[in-house]
Image: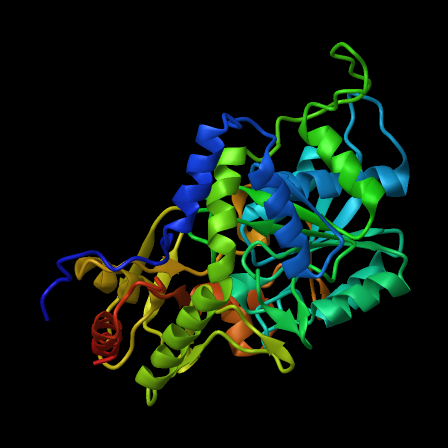
Length: 419
């Protein structure tokens, strides 16, 4: 097979034309700052789509998560001194297999992340482990849970567990906008929700995000903090720490033009997922699991190899090596082969408890507190589900502009790795 002449990407923005009209409107009316009609409309549409009362347009999803963490901390523990964070010294239960933006805001506010292992059946936070974590640390009052690759797990059950233990839930729906659980929109289960318009998400503004809430006071507080916490005074009056987090009206124009295409993008991503699933029949692999009662947005198609199909693979913190073996392969070999043909894949998120900066933090599995590794998991010695998925999994080219012919070639390339 020949290399792709034009690169096949993991995921890229898909523009439609209306976006430029709204950006032009911001330009021609001179609303080029962090106020304007585009922001107002994005907040209205975002709240409506997510089935929440309020949305606050921000510079990125991480900003939304940060303001959610800050507000939750002050709600739970009171307003801290200026030199301290709202969660200073408090444990917070966090998703383990996710991008670090999910939990970095916990650290911004002085909290101590405690990582909750992943559920093999959904690739998301394991409700069984979360319940065990509350048994171990009943004083914990905040949970931050992410929905991976647009394939939600049981965020509804996680919310019920939080309610039983008097804890607040922050739902990181950055990857899951438009996905549903029992017909209910992701982003609407938490006491706070966060969605992303980053450049490769299901819809995009090139940047941007929204904080979702059903509480007007929370929304107003987030808006205030996001504009440097200015007080209502005729001069620049400040009584608490603020941030430059507000969404630009120009960025909001792009997001506003993208929203009408959310469902179309989801349908395109679903077709890609189903084409992969059909194309990999007969191979010792499984695609992202779909939890019963959920409808994913199919943002990124991913797969995991059966343990017996794995050749020897070793990774350190920056490199990966493998030994080729007939009839077997591994994520490293597949990703390198795709790259050789000018196609982009990506490893599964490396679990947080395996990251250098968080290795000393506690990690809770179904057996309790522990730091099992993949070989022990495969041997049945313990459960470290996230490490196992990272070891055997990879994200596939999932760009919704990829043609069926290009995807068929990607499938053929991957099948060749098993020969």
